[in-house]
Image (tube, rainbow, N blue to C red):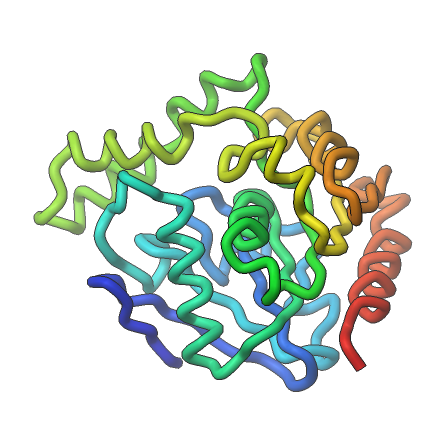
Length: 241
């Protein structure tokens, strides 16, 4: 499996299938890695297998990827890793499918490289609202403890500074509401239904972005098959011919 080396980071990714490329950004918070797609209600690697050239990756300091902690711009560093993976794979424009933290990753890509993302699916995006702020203040701790146990080059204050910078904002965390209002990329948003993925955030993203659509209800067993089909249609409709 290929690795990409960028700015002291070593990022692992894998490819599956053929067709128009799709970057998949897995759930799992700061542990976002390919294997955690198995936990998603809609896993694009299986639900749409064989229809696209799927690119899946372990994010920096998760799974098989590692690198420095860039506290000055955490979300920008992740986005640069993701674009470096696509460059390494020889891919210019692509679909994007993100779950959980993957939604915030996609929004950052739309800020930094809007000409490259053809369309995007945001499945239960994370969001910070008044009632869950404390959850995100502590979200990083298990990840940080595990990282420090394997990385002698990292001190606790470095990890804490990185985590504090990463989760300092509210709303969709990686971008502001004003930025979302400026995004013209077609998006399909499937709001979450729990504290880490508040429905309020997904609905607000869909309301703010001019080319976004909202899909709900979708996650309960009674609606999931139809929702999976609806997401598939959205992807097909926005795949360049």
